[in-house]
Length: 92
Image 1 (tube, helix red, strand yellow):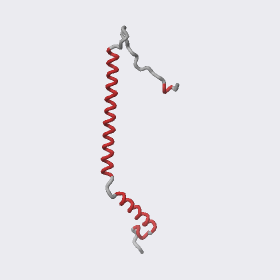
Image 2: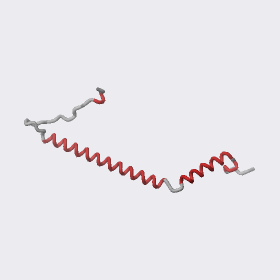
Image 3: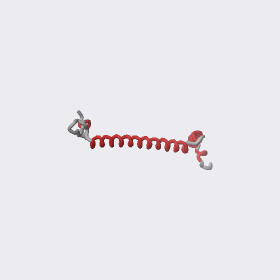
Image 4: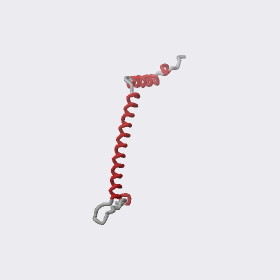
């Protein structure tokens, strides 16, 4: 077994004399479960917030017709490179 995949016992189960887990152990388990659920809910809220923020940025960043404007600009750049008089240089 890989040293990074070792099974480590982090919690020793405390039993009373009658084979039942002690109150302290049950309290720790309950607290760990609640913390795990709270962490999951927080992660879900953060993910939802990032999703909304991304959609807002996408909505504000993309405008109707911006693709047509970018294509026209690229076409003008190619024509200007082929014809130096269209690049803004004044004819002699």
